[in-house]
Length: 519
Image (cartoon, rainbow, N blue to C red; front, side, top):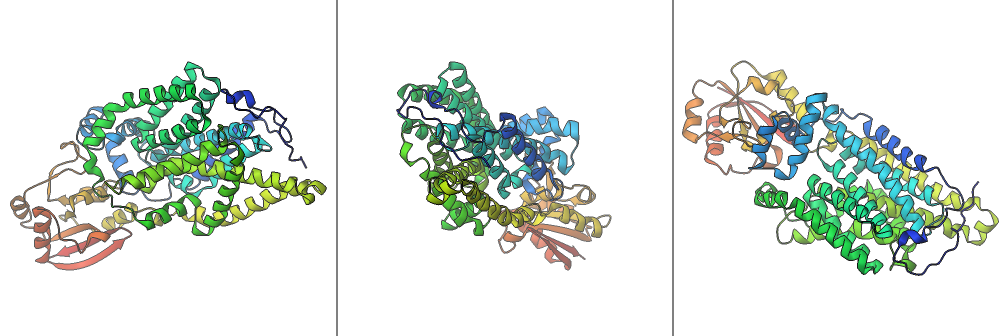
């Protein structure tokens, strides 16, 4: 059993070059390729298992619908709505053109991005563990990568046809390049950092909040030259992103559905990051141990001074901003999940060192490794259930496959359909075949023709004329909005028209309520 030895001694004085204090790794040193390859392979296996099993949900349906448009049609859409997801839609257009429109094809880019992010987390953890003088840095890095893979939230977004896996990959890459650039100071490293930040912002503008975390890290490290170079790189990235920022800000009405977060939002966020409520105390203890490992070196670039601001600041800023204008959504801060994995890995390394220097640890060096192994075993046992649950369709907001199956089994020639509100038309986009056989009476222009996500509606008098001769109509609504009075004249007219019919049957499929009316 390898011993948990202290790294080779070196000067602990502050240095303008963090790389200058990278020690030779003592004790058990794993090959670099293995540290990276194992988390990558683990992420491919864990995230790839049952990749196509969960039904598409509404946001994935938007991805599918927009990705099938031509480049020109996508660009015209972005001038009106969803510009912040434009680069992702353009990339997915290529993916769909090559791989098709199955759930697996749509989610494959997220799986690949998440797998690469896992390897990057391991590499970053290894480097930061060396800078922090943690025992067995390569093992610490490997554990960080595997902890990131084991998080149910990681699996969820690896199996989601949205850009959040890419966001995390770019955020980790930017953080790694920041550490290298701060250590070596070369202009090319800072340029690479600026590119990584730009890519992070392209994937999600909210992820630019990682700049706040990076700024705090460098402020703590007290390096004026590094701070100035970081500022130049950050400003350059933001300038490049400015057209997207301006366009996205002008389309902020797309966030009108976001509500002001309360205490429950914080509780939910913590639970999602941990994986389950049962895991919160254990992971909180590991994070505290990780923080303890760096308490004596808060004025240097270490794992703690990098990971702690990364974990805390972006969610805190977004929650604070939501007091003025609601913008906080849990998935907007998922790029902070690697920071939790890094701190937990540091906590395990610190725990191993603590046991190693104890009387019992000196008598039996194996005890130093036994403690982290026991903790990891408990973590694995507690994560098994949440990992199974996150692959189920019930873990998604919607079950569009189930909705489509109900319509396919019960529709008849001549059936019409009302979507109330009109945004509920997205329900038909995930699995569109049975919905194409229904007459969408309220639709004026299709989503493609109107350069919109859900199309435009006819006027109420036109709807009434179209309804003549209809004997059966489907009403598609969101379950949480059933008691709400429609805000549009067309919506109110739809309800008036169906009230003159009798209800044949009503199905509730997760978030969607299907009501079939007939004369």
